Image (cartoon, rainbow, N blue to C red; front, top):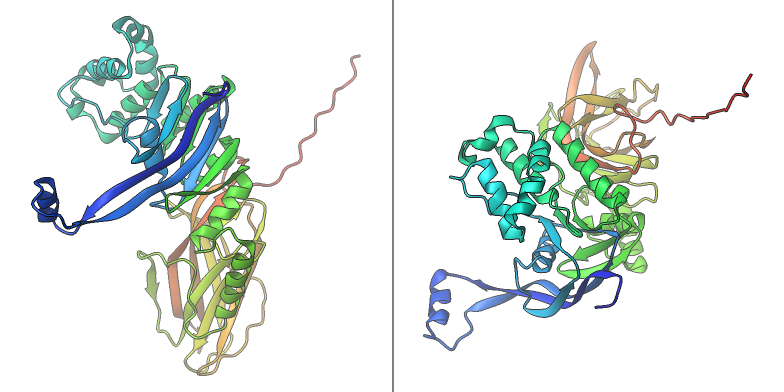
Length: 428
């Protein structure tokens, strides 16, 4: 293989046979029928890419895009239907943590078992054992059978084993968010340490913040094919299009965007992403919210926003009777349910129109995304006063998620955008 290339994937395809019923599989295996009893499903189709040594390459894509499949082929867990993968260097893979553990063995015994499977001698494992145990930090439980472990202790030990064997190539599949917040911080520090040492890293994640922060280049997969590759920001933007059914072709994307804009004022407004099935909805429905839409600063429908950019939330409302001074509101909460921010037309001193039966309005909230990178929940409200009494017409709690992508986080919930200067004083 060409010098300087750690991984080369050439024309790799992976096909699975899908049977409608188990008997069809049995008939074919026994040669009882010449009829084709299966449907072909290609998880990967003619995938080609290279990973240069010392680079951190991210792979993103929607569910079912083929991300985990290509990693399993690279690591030898799966064989490709066609094509070839060439690897130059010792691999450590963080795929299915603890998949090779023996539940009857103690933690220490499983460390030696995993190390042996990876190809280390007993002496090499001896030299790394203390680092592994210190990283896992599960105390005396290392001498107990792993079947007695909590799920948190199990993944801590599995992660510690996988990441402390000094690989030349690290392959990670959604494995940096294990354990509690303190262990996650330790995992990310180790990840950064690997980058600083010039290790080759292939990183699959739905966490777009981590992809943007750590990766030098990103591959975008969709339906088993490489759609594009490039710098993280461009690929994240393209990924956002795919999430709402828009491909990379600018002309086609523009047409779909225009159609989405027109849909805002049409009956039965269809959102480009589904409402949270666990959303809480209530109210007397004398006025109701028919749909909502989130758009980035370019007008693209998406619920993934880049930190520091502007975005707009739009809500389509229909009145079913005469309503004066309706109050329109939204709130943003973190995933634990803590309200981070929000506002309404009363707080903002906005005069709202009187609604009559059959009237519809679109309420737009535009703001700058100074939230820290992460995932949030958005709620919408439609309330007012009748005869001096507060009335809830319609509320949608946790209607949608909002993902903020950031390459720089500060302390707390939001970024104050502080400007820091340091001046050298003259010595007296």
